[in-house]
Image (tube, rainbow, N blue to C red; front, top):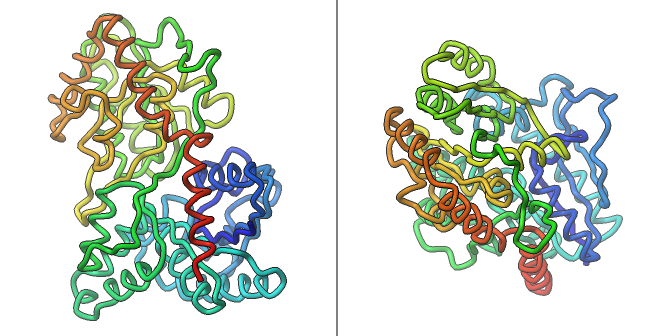
Length: 411
Protein backbone atom coordinates (compact mmCIF):
# COMPACT_ATOMS: atom_id res chain seq x y z
CA UNK A 1 0.00 0.00 0.00
CA UNK A 2 1.26 3.50 -0.87
CA UNK A 3 1.08 5.81 2.17
CA UNK A 4 1.73 9.56 2.04
CA UNK A 5 2.46 11.02 5.49
CA UNK A 6 2.48 14.66 6.59
CA UNK A 7 3.99 15.38 10.01
CA UNK A 8 5.09 18.51 11.83
CA UNK A 9 7.85 16.62 13.63
CA UNK A 10 10.33 14.02 12.41
CA UNK A 11 13.98 13.35 13.36
CA UNK A 12 16.15 15.84 11.45
CA UNK A 13 19.51 14.18 12.09
CA UNK A 14 20.89 10.95 13.50
CA UNK A 15 19.93 10.66 17.17
CA UNK A 16 17.33 13.47 17.06
CA UNK A 17 14.37 12.70 19.36
CA UNK A 18 11.93 15.09 17.65
CA UNK A 19 9.03 13.04 16.28
CA UNK A 20 10.89 9.83 17.05
CA UNK A 21 7.70 7.81 17.52
CA UNK A 22 6.46 8.96 14.08
CA UNK A 23 9.72 7.73 12.58
CA UNK A 24 9.39 4.37 14.35
CA UNK A 25 5.74 4.08 13.26
CA UNK A 26 6.74 4.64 9.64
CA UNK A 27 9.71 2.29 9.88
CA UNK A 28 7.61 -0.57 11.22
CA UNK A 29 4.98 -0.03 8.52
CA UNK A 30 7.82 -0.24 6.00
CA UNK A 31 8.86 -3.56 7.54
CA UNK A 32 5.33 -4.82 6.74
CA UNK A 33 5.92 -3.96 3.08
CA UNK A 34 4.17 -0.59 2.76
CA UNK A 35 5.63 2.13 0.55
CA UNK A 36 5.87 5.42 2.47
CA UNK A 37 6.65 9.01 1.52
CA UNK A 38 6.97 11.18 4.63
CA UNK A 39 6.73 14.99 4.35
CA UNK A 40 7.81 17.32 7.14
CA UNK A 41 8.56 21.02 7.33
CA UNK A 42 12.20 22.10 7.02
CA UNK A 43 14.26 23.50 9.88
CA UNK A 44 17.19 25.71 8.90
CA UNK A 45 18.67 25.59 12.42
CA UNK A 46 20.05 22.12 11.67
CA UNK A 47 23.64 22.13 10.48
CA UNK A 48 23.97 21.11 6.81
CA UNK A 49 26.78 18.80 7.94
CA UNK A 50 24.50 16.86 10.31
CA UNK A 51 24.13 13.23 9.30
CA UNK A 52 20.49 12.41 8.45
CA UNK A 53 18.67 9.62 10.24
CA UNK A 54 18.86 6.42 8.22
CA UNK A 55 15.37 5.47 7.02
CA UNK A 56 13.91 2.78 4.80
CA UNK A 57 11.33 5.22 3.44
CA UNK A 58 11.45 8.48 1.52
CA UNK A 59 11.70 11.70 3.60
CA UNK A 60 11.00 15.12 2.04
CA UNK A 61 11.58 18.43 3.87
CA UNK A 62 9.48 21.41 2.80
CA UNK A 63 10.76 24.98 3.43
CA UNK A 64 8.09 27.53 4.40
CA UNK A 65 9.97 30.64 5.58
CA UNK A 66 13.36 32.32 5.08
CA UNK A 67 16.23 30.62 6.95
CA UNK A 68 16.21 31.66 10.58
CA UNK A 69 12.50 32.48 10.58
CA UNK A 70 11.21 28.90 10.23
CA UNK A 71 10.59 28.58 13.97
CA UNK A 72 7.03 27.26 14.18
CA UNK A 73 7.99 23.61 14.54
CA UNK A 74 10.67 21.69 16.47
CA UNK A 75 12.57 23.13 19.44
CA UNK A 76 10.28 23.09 22.46
CA UNK A 77 7.34 21.98 20.26
CA UNK A 78 4.71 23.94 18.33
CA UNK A 79 2.41 24.81 21.28
CA UNK A 80 5.37 25.98 23.41
CA UNK A 81 6.88 27.88 20.48
CA UNK A 82 3.64 29.82 20.01
CA UNK A 83 3.34 30.45 23.76
CA UNK A 84 6.86 31.91 23.77
CA UNK A 85 6.11 34.12 20.75
CA UNK A 86 2.45 34.35 19.62
CA UNK A 87 3.54 35.98 16.34
CA UNK A 88 4.83 32.58 15.26
CA UNK A 89 1.22 31.53 14.68
CA UNK A 90 1.36 33.66 11.52
CA UNK A 91 3.80 31.14 10.08
CA UNK A 92 1.00 28.56 9.89
CA UNK A 93 -0.40 30.07 6.67
CA UNK A 94 2.83 29.88 4.61
CA UNK A 95 3.57 26.46 6.14
CA UNK A 96 0.20 25.09 5.02
CA UNK A 97 0.50 26.71 1.57
CA UNK A 98 4.03 25.40 0.94
CA UNK A 99 3.16 21.89 2.08
CA UNK A 100 -0.07 21.84 0.04
CA UNK A 101 1.75 22.69 -3.17
CA UNK A 102 4.53 20.15 -2.54
CA UNK A 103 2.13 17.34 -1.66
CA UNK A 104 -0.16 18.01 -4.62
CA UNK A 105 2.86 17.81 -6.94
CA UNK A 106 3.76 14.45 -5.40
CA UNK A 107 0.19 13.17 -5.71
CA UNK A 108 0.20 14.11 -9.40
CA UNK A 109 3.45 12.20 -9.82
CA UNK A 110 2.36 9.12 -7.88
CA UNK A 111 -1.09 8.77 -6.32
CA UNK A 112 -1.08 7.23 -2.82
CA UNK A 113 -3.70 4.89 -1.40
CA UNK A 114 -4.07 6.97 1.77
CA UNK A 115 -2.90 10.29 3.25
CA UNK A 116 -1.99 10.36 6.95
CA UNK A 117 -1.48 13.51 9.04
CA UNK A 118 0.36 13.35 12.38
CA UNK A 119 -0.77 16.04 14.87
CA UNK A 120 -4.14 17.69 14.39
CA UNK A 121 -2.79 21.09 13.40
CA UNK A 122 -1.61 21.76 10.84
CA UNK A 123 -0.65 18.34 9.44
CA UNK A 124 -3.91 16.56 10.30
CA UNK A 125 -6.05 19.37 8.93
CA UNK A 126 -3.93 19.40 5.77
CA UNK A 127 -4.17 15.63 5.29
CA UNK A 128 -7.96 15.80 5.56
CA UNK A 129 -8.20 18.83 3.24
CA UNK A 130 -5.96 17.36 0.55
CA UNK A 131 -7.68 13.99 0.87
CA UNK A 132 -11.07 15.56 0.31
CA UNK A 133 -9.70 17.64 -2.57
CA UNK A 134 -8.17 14.69 -4.41
CA UNK A 135 -10.61 11.95 -3.39
CA UNK A 136 -7.92 10.03 -1.50
CA UNK A 137 -8.89 8.50 1.90
CA UNK A 138 -7.28 10.24 4.87
CA UNK A 139 -6.45 9.46 8.49
CA UNK A 140 -5.58 11.97 11.21
CA UNK A 141 -3.29 10.73 13.99
CA UNK A 142 -3.89 13.04 16.94
CA UNK A 143 -1.31 13.62 19.70
CA UNK A 144 -1.61 15.61 22.91
CA UNK A 145 -0.07 18.85 21.60
CA UNK A 146 -2.48 19.12 18.67
CA UNK A 147 -5.58 18.37 20.75
CA UNK A 148 -4.66 21.03 23.31
CA UNK A 149 -3.82 23.56 20.60
CA UNK A 150 -7.25 22.96 19.11
CA UNK A 151 -8.78 23.47 22.55
CA UNK A 152 -7.01 26.83 22.85
CA UNK A 153 -8.59 27.89 19.57
CA UNK A 154 -11.97 27.28 21.22
CA UNK A 155 -11.61 29.70 24.12
CA UNK A 156 -12.02 33.43 24.63
CA UNK A 157 -12.73 35.54 21.56
CA UNK A 158 -11.95 32.61 19.26
CA UNK A 159 -14.82 30.68 20.87
CA UNK A 160 -17.26 33.34 19.66
CA UNK A 161 -15.81 33.18 16.17
CA UNK A 162 -16.11 29.38 16.24
CA UNK A 163 -12.71 28.61 14.68
CA UNK A 164 -11.85 25.77 17.07
CA UNK A 165 -15.24 24.09 16.71
CA UNK A 166 -15.16 24.39 12.93
CA UNK A 167 -11.68 22.85 12.76
CA UNK A 168 -12.75 20.07 15.14
CA UNK A 169 -15.79 19.24 13.01
CA UNK A 170 -13.65 19.17 9.89
CA UNK A 171 -11.06 16.87 11.51
CA UNK A 172 -13.84 14.60 12.83
CA UNK A 173 -15.40 14.26 9.38
CA UNK A 174 -13.19 11.24 8.73
CA UNK A 175 -11.09 8.63 10.50
CA UNK A 176 -9.04 9.95 13.40
CA UNK A 177 -7.08 8.51 16.35
CA UNK A 178 -5.86 9.80 19.72
CA UNK A 179 -3.61 7.92 22.16
CA UNK A 180 -5.76 8.07 25.31
CA UNK A 181 -9.38 8.32 26.42
CA UNK A 182 -8.58 11.57 28.24
CA UNK A 183 -7.57 13.18 24.93
CA UNK A 184 -10.62 11.71 23.19
CA UNK A 185 -12.83 13.31 25.86
CA UNK A 186 -11.02 16.65 25.50
CA UNK A 187 -11.48 16.57 21.72
CA UNK A 188 -15.15 15.69 22.18
CA UNK A 189 -15.48 18.72 24.46
CA UNK A 190 -14.22 20.99 21.69
CA UNK A 191 -16.40 19.23 19.16
CA UNK A 192 -19.49 19.44 21.33
CA UNK A 193 -20.35 15.78 20.70
CA UNK A 194 -18.74 12.36 21.01
CA UNK A 195 -17.37 12.16 17.46
CA UNK A 196 -17.95 8.60 16.23
CA UNK A 197 -14.84 8.61 14.03
CA UNK A 198 -12.39 9.20 16.91
CA UNK A 199 -10.58 6.00 17.89
CA UNK A 200 -8.18 5.40 20.76
CA UNK A 201 -4.92 3.94 19.45
CA UNK A 202 -1.61 4.95 21.05
CA UNK A 203 1.84 5.22 19.58
CA UNK A 204 4.17 2.35 20.39
CA UNK A 205 7.77 2.08 21.55
CA UNK A 206 10.87 0.04 20.85
CA UNK A 207 10.97 -2.65 23.57
CA UNK A 208 14.02 -3.63 25.58
CA UNK A 209 16.07 -6.43 24.11
CA UNK A 210 15.60 -9.53 26.22
CA UNK A 211 17.66 -12.68 26.33
CA UNK A 212 14.53 -14.68 27.16
CA UNK A 213 10.82 -13.82 26.66
CA UNK A 214 9.75 -11.38 29.38
CA UNK A 215 13.26 -11.12 30.83
CA UNK A 216 15.56 -8.12 31.15
CA UNK A 217 18.73 -8.35 33.21
CA UNK A 218 19.08 -5.08 35.16
CA UNK A 219 22.32 -3.90 36.71
CA UNK A 220 22.91 -5.03 40.26
CA UNK A 221 22.89 -1.41 41.48
CA UNK A 222 19.69 -0.45 39.60
CA UNK A 223 17.93 0.51 42.84
CA UNK A 224 20.52 3.27 43.33
CA UNK A 225 19.66 4.99 40.05
CA UNK A 226 16.55 6.97 39.18
CA UNK A 227 15.59 8.32 35.75
CA UNK A 228 13.76 11.42 34.55
CA UNK A 229 13.62 11.43 30.75
CA UNK A 230 11.98 13.83 28.29
CA UNK A 231 12.13 17.33 26.82
CA UNK A 232 13.22 19.90 29.39
CA UNK A 233 10.15 22.11 29.11
CA UNK A 234 7.69 23.41 31.68
CA UNK A 235 5.00 20.76 31.23
CA UNK A 236 7.40 17.95 32.17
CA UNK A 237 7.75 19.23 35.75
CA UNK A 238 11.41 18.23 35.98
CA UNK A 239 11.99 20.92 38.63
CA UNK A 240 9.61 19.06 40.95
CA UNK A 241 11.49 15.80 40.32
CA UNK A 242 14.83 17.41 41.17
CA UNK A 243 13.61 19.15 44.34
CA UNK A 244 11.78 16.11 45.70
CA UNK A 245 14.67 13.76 44.92
CA UNK A 246 17.36 16.01 46.41
CA UNK A 247 15.43 16.26 49.68
CA UNK A 248 15.01 12.47 50.00
CA UNK A 249 16.95 10.51 52.61
CA UNK A 250 18.49 7.45 50.94
CA UNK A 251 20.27 4.65 52.74
CA UNK A 252 23.14 4.72 50.22
CA UNK A 253 24.43 7.01 47.43
CA UNK A 254 21.66 7.42 44.83
CA UNK A 255 21.67 9.31 41.52
CA UNK A 256 18.89 10.98 39.56
CA UNK A 257 19.71 10.86 35.84
CA UNK A 258 18.14 13.64 33.74
CA UNK A 259 17.99 12.57 30.09
CA UNK A 260 16.85 15.20 27.60
CA UNK A 261 17.39 18.77 26.55
CA UNK A 262 15.35 21.92 26.07
CA UNK A 263 14.95 25.59 27.04
CA UNK A 264 14.66 24.74 30.77
CA UNK A 265 18.03 22.99 31.01
CA UNK A 266 20.14 25.90 32.33
CA UNK A 267 17.55 26.72 35.01
CA UNK A 268 17.25 23.07 36.05
CA UNK A 269 21.01 22.63 36.28
CA UNK A 270 21.21 25.74 38.49
CA UNK A 271 18.40 24.35 40.66
CA UNK A 272 20.24 21.04 41.10
CA UNK A 273 23.46 22.84 42.06
CA UNK A 274 21.59 24.92 44.61
CA UNK A 275 20.05 21.84 46.21
CA UNK A 276 23.32 19.94 46.47
CA UNK A 277 23.62 18.55 49.97
CA UNK A 278 19.91 18.99 50.82
CA UNK A 279 19.38 15.25 51.25
CA UNK A 280 21.81 12.55 52.21
CA UNK A 281 23.45 10.51 49.47
CA UNK A 282 21.78 12.34 46.55
CA UNK A 283 23.34 13.31 43.24
CA UNK A 284 21.83 14.72 40.01
CA UNK A 285 23.45 14.04 36.64
CA UNK A 286 22.42 15.68 33.35
CA UNK A 287 23.02 13.59 30.21
CA UNK A 288 21.45 15.73 27.49
CA UNK A 289 19.74 13.90 24.65
CA UNK A 290 20.55 10.18 24.67
CA UNK A 291 19.83 7.74 21.86
CA UNK A 292 20.81 4.35 20.53
CA UNK A 293 23.10 2.23 22.69
CA UNK A 294 23.66 5.04 25.22
CA UNK A 295 19.92 5.36 25.79
CA UNK A 296 19.48 1.60 26.17
CA UNK A 297 22.33 1.46 28.67
CA UNK A 298 20.86 4.30 30.74
CA UNK A 299 17.40 2.71 30.74
CA UNK A 300 18.85 -0.60 31.87
CA UNK A 301 20.85 1.13 34.58
CA UNK A 302 17.85 2.70 36.37
CA UNK A 303 15.54 0.84 38.72
CA UNK A 304 13.07 3.73 39.16
CA UNK A 305 11.71 6.54 36.98
CA UNK A 306 10.01 9.84 37.82
CA UNK A 307 7.23 11.33 35.68
CA UNK A 308 6.22 14.65 37.19
CA UNK A 309 4.35 16.19 34.24
CA UNK A 310 1.74 18.77 35.18
CA UNK A 311 -1.38 20.30 33.73
CA UNK A 312 -0.59 23.82 32.57
CA UNK A 313 -2.75 26.84 33.35
CA UNK A 314 -4.22 26.66 29.83
CA UNK A 315 -5.41 23.09 30.46
CA UNK A 316 -2.73 21.33 28.46
CA UNK A 317 -1.60 17.95 29.77
CA UNK A 318 0.42 15.07 28.40
CA UNK A 319 -0.99 12.02 26.69
CA UNK A 320 0.85 8.72 27.15
CA UNK A 321 4.60 9.49 27.44
CA UNK A 322 6.70 7.17 25.30
CA UNK A 323 9.49 7.54 27.88
CA UNK A 324 7.20 5.86 30.43
CA UNK A 325 6.72 2.86 28.13
CA UNK A 326 10.44 2.59 27.42
CA UNK A 327 11.39 2.78 31.09
CA UNK A 328 8.74 0.23 32.05
CA UNK A 329 9.94 -2.12 29.31
CA UNK A 330 13.38 -2.09 30.92
CA UNK A 331 11.86 -2.84 34.31
CA UNK A 332 12.01 0.61 35.92
CA UNK A 333 9.28 1.24 38.49
CA UNK A 334 7.51 4.52 37.77
CA UNK A 335 6.43 7.16 40.26
CA UNK A 336 3.98 9.42 38.42
CA UNK A 337 2.00 12.57 38.73
CA UNK A 338 -1.72 12.36 38.00
CA UNK A 339 -1.23 12.18 34.21
CA UNK A 340 -4.40 11.34 32.26
CA UNK A 341 -3.75 8.20 30.24
CA UNK A 342 -1.22 6.59 32.57
CA UNK A 343 -3.63 5.01 35.04
CA UNK A 344 -4.24 2.02 32.74
CA UNK A 345 -0.54 1.18 32.63
CA UNK A 346 0.63 1.78 36.22
CA UNK A 347 0.54 -1.48 38.19
CA UNK A 348 -0.35 -0.03 41.62
CA UNK A 349 -1.87 3.42 40.99
CA UNK A 350 -2.15 4.45 44.65
CA UNK A 351 1.46 3.50 45.45
CA UNK A 352 2.90 4.83 42.19
CA UNK A 353 0.89 8.05 41.81
CA UNK A 354 1.32 11.30 43.75
CA UNK A 355 -1.92 13.29 43.52
CA UNK A 356 -0.39 16.62 44.55
CA UNK A 357 2.43 18.97 43.54
CA UNK A 358 3.59 19.23 47.15
CA UNK A 359 7.33 18.57 47.24
CA UNK A 360 7.23 16.92 50.67
CA UNK A 361 4.62 14.42 49.46
CA UNK A 362 6.80 13.55 46.48
CA UNK A 363 9.86 13.14 48.70
CA UNK A 364 7.98 10.76 51.00
CA UNK A 365 6.74 8.74 47.99
CA UNK A 366 10.29 8.50 46.63
CA UNK A 367 11.58 7.29 50.00
CA UNK A 368 8.81 4.67 50.24
CA UNK A 369 9.63 3.23 46.81
CA UNK A 370 13.36 3.33 47.48
CA UNK A 371 12.80 1.45 50.75
CA UNK A 372 10.73 -1.36 49.21
CA UNK A 373 12.10 -4.86 49.60
CA UNK A 374 13.98 -6.64 46.81
CA UNK A 375 11.04 -9.01 46.36
CA UNK A 376 8.48 -6.20 46.04
CA UNK A 377 10.77 -4.34 43.65
CA UNK A 378 11.19 -7.42 41.46
CA UNK A 379 7.46 -8.18 41.40
CA UNK A 380 6.55 -4.59 40.50
CA UNK A 381 9.24 -4.49 37.84
CA UNK A 382 8.03 -7.68 36.17
CA UNK A 383 4.37 -6.65 36.36
CA UNK A 384 5.18 -3.23 34.88
CA UNK A 385 6.97 -4.79 31.92
CA UNK A 386 4.07 -7.14 31.27
CA UNK A 387 1.58 -4.24 31.43
CA UNK A 388 3.24 -2.32 28.57
CA UNK A 389 4.28 -5.23 26.33
CA UNK A 390 1.12 -4.90 24.23
CA UNK A 391 2.25 -1.40 23.16
CA UNK A 392 5.64 -2.50 21.81
CA UNK A 393 5.87 -1.74 18.10
CA UNK A 394 6.32 -5.37 16.98
CA UNK A 395 2.90 -6.07 18.55
CA UNK A 396 1.03 -2.78 18.16
CA UNK A 397 1.90 -2.14 14.52
CA UNK A 398 -0.55 -4.89 13.48
CA UNK A 399 -3.43 -2.71 14.76
CA UNK A 400 -2.15 0.28 12.80
CA UNK A 401 -1.79 -1.84 9.70
CA UNK A 402 -5.37 -3.06 10.02
CA UNK A 403 -6.68 0.48 10.56
CA UNK A 404 -4.80 1.90 7.56
CA UNK A 405 -6.08 -0.86 5.31
CA UNK A 406 -9.65 -0.27 6.50
CA UNK A 407 -9.49 3.49 5.92
CA UNK A 408 -7.79 3.08 2.54
CA UNK A 409 -10.75 1.22 1.05
CA UNK A 410 -13.27 3.83 2.21
CA UNK A 411 -14.05 6.06 -0.76
